[in-house]
Structure formats: C-alpha cells, structure tokens
Length: 294
Image (cartoon, rainbow, N blue to C red; front, side, top):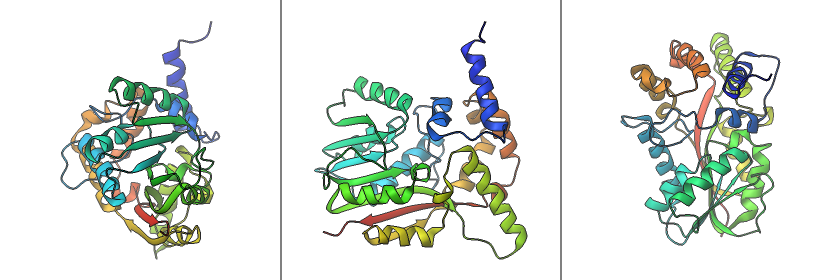
C-alpha cells in the first residue's frame, strides 16, 4: 500500500529541504510548494517591497506596483509577464494600470492551471491569456509586445542571458523590459564576510534551482543587458527594502510562518533565529529597466 498523498508530500518537503545530495529542477520545486504561500488574501510568491507596509500582502502588492511603475505600464500596452506564478500581479496590473492585454508564460503547469482558473473566475480571461511556455524560447512573433516583465523569476531561467535575447526580440521598438531579480552581492573585502556571502548564496541557489550561469553581480547584469541590444539600462539595488524588513516583519508576526506547509515551518523559524545581515549576506535584489531602441 502506498502512503497517503499528504504524507508523500511531507516526505518530499523533507527531501527538498534537508537532502544535500539531490538537486531539484524549478518546476518540481514549485509543484511542491503549490499554494502553500505566506500571504493571507493573495497567492503571491514574491518577497515584497517594504516602505512601511504592515502586511506581507501589502508589500507584495507594492513590489508589483513598483515594477509596473518602472515599466510605465498603461492603456494601449500589450504586456508579456514571464514566470507569472498564480497571476496576482497580472490581475492587479489590469485593475490599476489598464493595459490592453496581458500574455503570461510559465513553465510550471500546476501554477498555470491554478492561475487560469482564478482569472476565469474573475471574468478576465479575454484580457489575460496565461500559457504554459518558456521565457527562453518564447512562442511569440518578433516585435509583438510593448512591455516584458519578469517579477522575481529570471534567476531561474536557463539562462537569464538567453531570456534577455528573447525579450529583446519580442519587444517592439521603444519597448521596455523590467525585472525584479535576485543576484549575488559584490564580494566583500574581508574573508569572513565573503564566507558568509558564499554560504548565503549557495543556500538559496541550491534550494531554488538557480543555475550557476546566472550568478553574477550588478555590474555584469548591466553589461549583459547592453550586449543584448538594450539601451538606457539601469540596474538598481533595492535589497534594503526587501530582505531586512521582510525578516523583521516575519519575526514580529510568527503567525505568517504558520501559513506555510508544516514541513517548512521549522526551517523558516530557524532562519528567523539568524541575523538578517548574515542570512541574506550573499543576496542582492535588483530592479532592472532596459529599453529596446526605438
């Protein structure tokens, strides 16, 4: 007799979190996580942007709003959202920015199915088209969208550079790419700080399927966007508005952690017992904006 599904899932969580000899691909990670999210009224998977927000939901909305603002998203735009998760940001952008159409690509079928159902229930499927597809092999014609957005997902792509090339191809002249992305911090000067950085980065990269080819800092990020053909490139670190305030919020509100899957709660509590400066020492968080020449 096979063990019940909840028990098998519990064992899978333990395997993912504690087995150092197995590497998981990105679709398997997100299939496992499913809808066990820490937000309360939404299904966001991002870390949020914190400028005084009082809940994780508010901070996740704030990050989506920040990205849309940097994209100058508005009426008339055809938007491509890659790695859309459960489509919370797409629903919000349609309500707050009013683009003509949003097309989503996501390689995780389980997320696509849930997101489509949510969009259908809201009666928005005529303006939000969510598809299973890759950000590095986009099934789209060239010069077909005004905006390309990658909200906290491009670090997964194999490779991010290939995604830049595809984003450039599908953008119309004068179109814009915006990413909210996780990359390594620039190396510290002293050896102890560098050791903390390596540990921090490897912990996250190993558990969340970040390819080694995507492990480069802000300066190279900017350079690779330029080599892909983009102009007016900006790569800004917003890590101080992401990691530490998130850590502090979770420390003050342990009930947020209780929304996670039971197998994930213990390591989450352990992480909150560490200093945020140590835990996130190796993680930068950047907001990148780049234009296709008009």
